[in-house]
Every structure is written in structure tokens, then in C-alpha cells.
Length: 359
Image 1 (cartoon, rainbow, N blue to C red):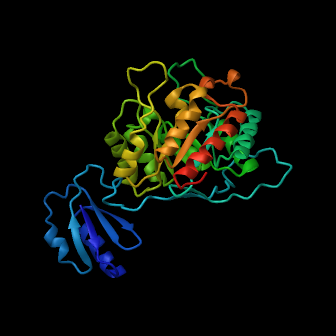
Image 2 (image 1 turned 90 degrees about the vertical axis):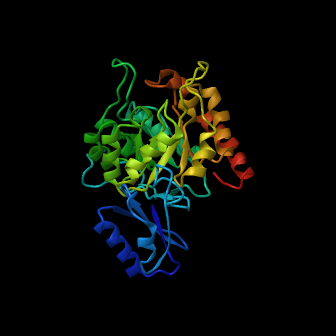
């Protein structure tokens, strides 16, 4: 249920409504729009009657939300969510790194969910200092605004490279110091959230963990921006309900990631669900990111899939780039070389311009 306040409702009137919600044992969630303030009532509100709220000063109307994803839906939050990254510098908690010879570049604000289509790019896994620093410079020069890279890697085989753990996080932080790019990296367990949040600007929840509810609660409590990947066999509603877990903690900095779903088709690694992009934009206010690398599994299909995603309305892409894919320790077959990434970005710029957006 949502309580829509009248235009110009005072802060006292809004506060009185929130107090009443809490007195009845529900959790209030505030959404302050340009023209209206909305108070979401979270809990089993079936016994409540709209009339008892409409009598409160400042209340315009009460609306019951039929969708199960209350906070992720547009009923609660009609305007698109904008996520802003400032790329904060990590100070005392970081290990010491070799000093860069050049001064640290300025970190301009990155905005996700607005007019610009934002690209996150980097290797599937952080392999070495040289690899991640070289890739970070390459993707920045190519137009990426965020560096992605895995320090903890969930792999199908226990014998595959599992990532460097905290050392990988340290290398990502060093790459951020060298380039100014905020970093996005995966967290796999609730106990690892405080550590990863110390280094990362965006916490990624991988496809295998989309319904790891303990982990969703933990990243919700962290208040860090979250990139939530759709489960490989999950519906759109299940993705939005997973986001609801994070949002229920008051962390509204959530991005939904379509990364392909598992179907009967074997030619590609997964099947990119282009339908999900406009559907999610219609159902939810959260930014939608597309992962064409995992969707296709083939580097030579990534450019075309990325163009389709931008044309369909995606707010951003997360793309795998590696300086030497043939020697990559993880997912080399779907990784672009830096020169191919630059070429793709040129194609995407023209697509974005055609739909009145920019890269």
C-alpha cells in the first residue's frame, strides 16, 4: 500500500503519517518526488482500510499495490532511480600500494539511469597487476566509465581459477587510483560483504546468487550500490523480488542486470532476453544494465548484442575486455580485445544518438 501526500504537504504531516505507520507495526519507506511525496507501507497491510489513512492531514489518497514487488515497482517510485557514483578514495583501511609516478586523476561523478548509457568494462577475473592496470587504462580510453573485474570467482568446476580474493580487490583499488574509474566487483557470501564494500564502488550479485537471500540482506544493509544479475533460469518477477530484498533495507541504489537466460539453444552461451529490457523499464524504476558477454559467450557477437540492448533502452552495459583473451584465465572466448572494444563504442554512440541518448 502507498500513501500519496498532497502537493505541498508539510514535513510535519509527512512525519505524522510515518509515525502512524510505525505505531501499527509496519515499515515506512519514503519516496520524495518532484511533485508528490509517497509513503510506502511495507508488511501485510490487508487488515488496513484506506479510509483510516485518508483522514490524516496532508494525505491525498491511498493506493493498494497489487504487484508483489512493492518497492521495486513504479507505483511506489514513479520517477526513474538515478544512481550517482563519486568514486570515493579508500584511505586508512587499504593496504599500501606502489606509488604511481603521476598524480591521481580527478574522479568525475558517474550517473547511472539518466540520459547517458554507461559502460562498465574490464576482465572477467583480475589476474595480475599488469593485466588489470593495462585493461583499466584501455577501457577508460575507449569510453568506459566504470571498471569491472572479478576478485572472487564462482566457477562451475572447483579446479578452475577462483580469483585472488582480497589481493584482487587491492589490485582493483590500485587500478582505480591510476585511472579514476569506479570499480564493480562480485561478492559471493554475506561474510565477505564488509571486506568487498571496503574496496568496491558497486557490489555485484552474480546469477548464481540472485536468490541467496542472506547475501541480499547483507548487501542491502551495506547501503552500497548493487548490480543484481538475473538468475540464469529466473523470471522477471523473481528478479524484481530479489531486488525487493535489497530495497527493503532502505538501499535504493540497485541496478537490474539482464545477462541472458538458459534456454534450449546451444549455439550461444545463454539467450539474451531483449524483451526484459523494456519490460523491466515499464515495471520498475531501477536502472537496467545488460551483460552481452555472458549472454552470447562469443566475442564476435558482443557488439551486435550491445547495439540491440542500447536500442531497446538499456541504461548501461557490462562488457568483458582483456588485453590477451587467448591467455585469459576465465572467459577468454567472450572477451573483447581493447581495439574491438573501441570499435564497439563507436557503434554504440550512433545507436544512442538515434534514440536521443548519449554515450
